[in-house]
Length: 79
Image (cartoon, rainbow, N blue to C red; front, side, top):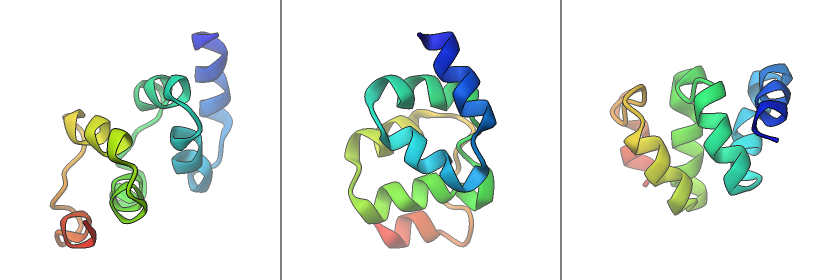
């Protein structure tokens, strides 16, 4: 199933990646490795802050590719 989820994630348009990550824990765990969480100026991090997705927020902040201060400290201000 992990390989299938990775394939699905690669074909999703960028605007749907955050929804993909929020679907379930399996999708989030696989999605964070198959999808770059920093696309569109860390929009996944911004949405996780504004919508209160604490588990996803923790996973994103533990990812070394994610910079919570970009762009212009927006994720931190939204939290």
